[in-house]
Image (cartoon, rainbow, N blue to C red; front, side, top):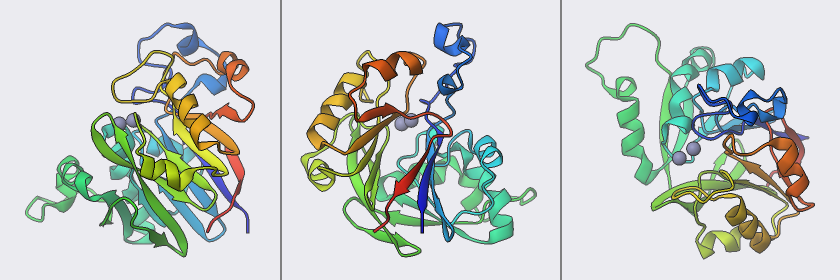
Amino acid sequence: MQTKLTFLGTGTSGGVPEISCTCAVCLSDNPKNKRLRTSVLISNENLSILIDCSADFRQQALQYKIQNLDAVLVTHTHHDHIAGVDDLRSITCKTGKMNIYIKDSEMPSFKKAFYYIFETNLQKGGGLPDIELVTIKEKCRFSVKDVVFEPLLVFHGIIPILGYKFGNTAYITDAKSLPDSTLMVIKGIDILIINALRYKPHKTHLNLEEALRIIETIKPRRAYLIHTTHDIDYEKISQELPENVFLAFDGLVLEDIVLN
Ligand SMILES: [Zn+2]
Ligand SMILES: [Zn+2]
């Protein structure tokens, strides 16, 4: 059975184009320079799993015709990665309760952001997403419908957050650094998806140079860069990248995901 990974969004927190920006990338007609907020869908005939539920989830779900989801895996609770959770109600009202997997240390901020889902004494009117929170932590594998996911510890500045390894693929977003324990687990992996914000350094995200250095250490067969700003022009960067490294773009589908 063929499993695919669809890049639903590849942009940083503000998306590309950025509101009110008139730079060349924001004004570009190239669809590969239009980036919704970062999220991917892993899917096959039996399975549909979202990593992060972005601020653009509604638009992504409509565009890619997402009808059902078995689970959402959260990397961390910054708004661009979870703001779409409210819109999960359009799916759970038809399919029933859905598990959301979140790192132990990120659980309080998730509950704070979506307090109205969890507070029982509030007036109920509009629909709520029917979700069950599942606490996870680094290295402790878990399965969603027989597919094993290994949470990977990465540091978003000083905040410990999670990437995920599944089958021949590792997915890392919003990292600034990767501990040796994570590098060891994904060394030589087939497909590495990793964030590379922009050319200039940034306090809490890898820039291009740092991401390429990590790719050089991990030596994946192929790497895809995500979570980029309007600094990054698709055509320009595509000419600069090493042979096995690509800038991911919204709508790109990887057809060779092997699970377990
Ligand atoms: Zn982000
Ligand atoms: Zn973040």
